[in-house]
Each structure stands twice: as structure tokens, then as C-alpha cells.
Image (cartoon, rainbow, N blue to C red):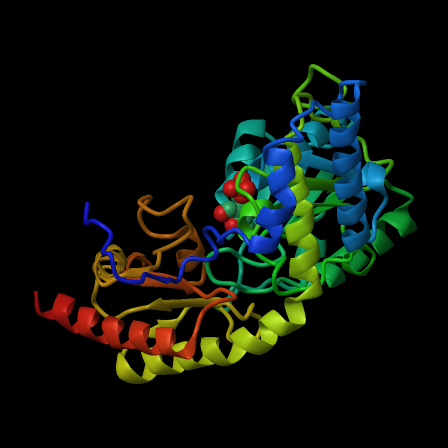
Length: 389
Ligand code: PLP
């Protein structure tokens, strides 16, 4: 492995992990140190911790425009997804064993559905990475228990029409007098860029991860609409309304709630700052590296994601050379890097070799024009170098 240089690193992997916002760290600090009580204890230390957890729950519920009892704190989005799908299937009537999802979903969704052994329709996406409301609705059958679709794709940043799909599912259920299918959205990669008010998104459940919103790693949220039957998967104590047993990660919960509030208060500013930088990076790569191609829609895309296939080079080699030059980037998602050609890029209709030549650069709140220029310059150099060798 190449070592980290002492010079300033340029971080272009915010879809994998974001730094901890100092405002978040400040809010967490008391609960990571002196206020260490167990929220289930009845003494003063315990009550203080309980109050902080419930205050955080209120904050998250307010940001998402939902009820406090609909918020479950978890250890991250993977856990939220496991709890939601497994719990839903466990509580659903016998005949409801069919799930509709996208071929481009995160590995957490794909693996859990595989484990559940239910019948799954993996809807294809078009060359932009998008799917229409009609295609989703046509895939729903009487046995469909769950429709699950991420709000923003973690590899290519495309924004799926979640609100439109949610409205269509609501209407269908109303007309048929049905409670299923439940509509879930993984909103992990949407949180910094798009409003997440649930009443506008028309979802029955969604998940978030603290580590992608300038909050702490190992913290997450599952929102489940009241009345939706989901059976607990981690049992023991009565924490999280009996839905997730185990002592709460108090500092993590405070951090996540603070980070979510900040991310949702600042998304317009985030968009305003990052959109021109994203354009600059795309333009620079496409102009200076002939043969490079954008992966995913350019218009239906969050402002921090740049994903391109580079001509005749191996994406992993590019990422390693970038790392050596002081730039952190990635090939696909952090959960699938090293797993060969990305299932997301091939789902766009690209060949395996085009998928293997792709790289993902994800910008963050602190990204600057100067950094973008450096990345373009280094990419041009590295692609030329790899083509010769
Ligand atoms: N869903 C998406 C879209 C992600 O990007 C990630 C993380 O990369 C996850 C789920 C998993 O989140 P966590 O690491 O909090 O379990």
C-alpha cells in the first residue's frame, strides 16, 4: 500500500464518508465524555441521557415532518434496511412475498433481499440510470409487499422520482383498499442535497446514515410510518419502542440529529456552492480527456457526484495513482470497490470494460475551485501515463 503523504490531501470521496462537522462534534462531546449515563437508568445521569436522546428524536422527527414515535435510531443505514425489510416480511401475510426494486440499488438492499429468499423484480434503468413511474407501477402485483428504491444513487448520483412513485403507490392502495405494498426509500445520499420532508416524498419508510451527512459513523435512522407492521429483529431490552434492543449510542444519536438538522437547513447553500464546481469538473474531464464519458444523467443528478468512464484505463489503477498524488477518490461505492465491474455502471448499458474504467469523484462542503483544477490536471497526467504503460 502506498503511504499517505504529509502534504494536504484532497478529499473527493464524500459519498463514502464525510468529515465530522465541528458543530456536530461540539454537540456530541458532553455525551461522549461526562454525561455517560444509560438512558434506561432512573437516576439523574440516566434521566439526562434519556432527555438528550428524546430531544434528538424530536429534532429528527421535526426535520422529516413525522411523529417522534416513527423514528428508530440504529447503527447505520445497513441496519435500518435489514430491520425494515426483514421485519416487514416477518409481519406480512403469507401471500405477500414479492418485492420490486431497481437493478442499481445499494448492496445492502440487494443482499438483504437475496437473504430473504422472496421473489424480487429487479427493474432495469435506462442509459441515464433512471426509471419511470409507469414501469414501477406495472411491476406491482397482488403479492407485492414492498417497493424499495433509493432516492439518490450512491455511485452515479442520479435522483429517482421518489415523490411521484410514492404518490402513485398511495393512490393504488387507496383505490384497492390495500395496505401493501409498503414504499421504502434509501435516502442516504440525498440528505445533503434534497429536502426530506416525508409528507412531500410520500414514502412509508426511509433510512439515513450519519456518516454521509457530516455526522458520526455507526449512527443511522429508520423512519417507519405509524401503523406499518414491522417485526423487531434485534430483541432484548425495550429500547427504541422495542424495535431495536440494546443501550442507545447516545453521543451518536445526538450527533446524527445535529448533523441532519444542519444538512437539511443548508442544502440550498450546498447546491449553490457545489453545482458550479461539479460542472467545472465534468467539463474539464470531458474536454481534456477525449473519449471519457459521463455515467448517469447530467440533469437528474445531485450536485456533488461526478462519475465518468475513462478511455482505455483501469479505474482502480487511476484511483491508486490519484491516491499517490494526494487525492482520495473511488471506483464504485465503498461497499463494492474491489468487487469487479460495478453493477450500477453495467446496468446503464456500459460494457464490463467501460465499467471497470469508471471512477467516482464526490465533492463536499469544503471543496474548492483550486482543488478541482488540481484533480483535472492529475487525472490528465495519470490517464496519459496509464495509456502508455
Ligand atoms: N445506502 C446507501 C445509498 C449508501 O451509500 C450506504 C453507504 O455507503 C449505505 C446504504 C450503507 O450505510 P451504512 O454504512 O450507514 O450502513
